[in-house]
Each structure stands twice: as structure tokens, then as C-alpha cells.
Length: 204
Image (cartoon, rainbow, N blue to C red; front, side, top):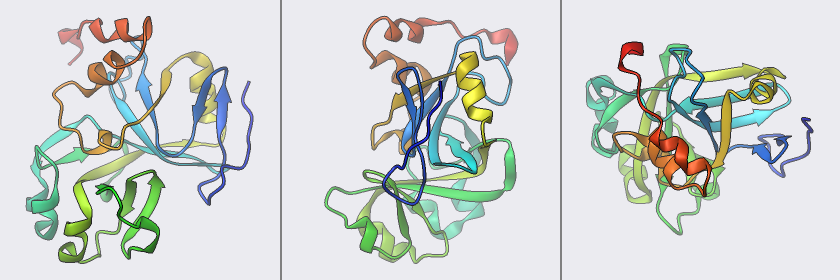
């Protein structure tokens, strides 16, 4: 059963489904039987979760477009592979940027950065890259995002569409070939066994 509680910052509430707690900074890992093309074998990083709904970005779908081609000022700071990522099916013509900052960086006092969780922050792309560069390990730019209206994500969790897991600060900028499997593999048994679930090529 879902519950709502104050999270302690302006992002809002936490929702708990049995032992699954959704809050800014958690991961939604698609279940093996979630075959909807937009979200099959995806890892979503939750950016906002409050009484209006939830917003996140898919962090394991790189496009073939280099960030430097669309945002020349930010190309050098984009983490490998340096591509624009497909953050979700909503507003593909809009860009959202996450940054993993270096240890000790005062996010809350840094212009252009807004903390999401821990060392992960939203980056204002109108900021000066020369000012941001010394503070970050890397950035990831997403075209579009994934969004849920109030109660929608809770329904999907009740249905078993998503596995809610803790994120590492490096996850938003990770360039691993199969982040979905990597995230599952680092979980305790029996959850880690899901990482061996085969990719069904016919569903490409």
C-alpha cells in the first residue's frame, strides 16, 4: 500500500510499496516482463517525486547524436560516450541535464546546480560551462523525460512493472553497455539473478 510523507526538501514525498521506496535519487529498473517499447529493459533515475506526480530520465539509452552537435558549449563535459541520451517519451524536443559533482562540492551554494540526491544535481544549461567544469565529474544531457501523473507510478509499482533500487552517484553518467544488467547484478540474491535474463532480439 502506498503512503506519503514529507521528504525533508522541496521535492516532496516518498511512496512505499512493501519495501520499495520511491524518492528523488532512486532507480526504477524495468521488470523482465515489461515489454512496452518505451521502457523495455530501461533504468530510470527519479528526479522529482511529489504530490503532483513523478519525473525521471532513462539513463541507459544513448542516441547517435553527440552532445556537441546540439549543445556545443557542453560537449566536452558530457560523460562518455558523449552522446545525447533519450530520457523518455515526453517532450523529446526539450533538454534536461544531470551532473555528478566531485566530492566536497557545495551543490547548494553553486549557481547553476540544484541538488537531486547526494552528489547528483540538475544542471542549468544556461550556466557557464567554464564555471561548472571544475565542480563535476561529468554531465549527461537527456532529450525528453519520463513522467507519471499522481497515482500512476504507484499503480505501475503495484502491477510489478518496476523494481525500485538505490542509485550510485555514478549511475546517471555511467556509460556501461548494459546498465540494466549491471544494476541488477550488484543486488543481493535472488534479485541479481535477473541480470541473466536474455535480451530478446526479435523485440528490437
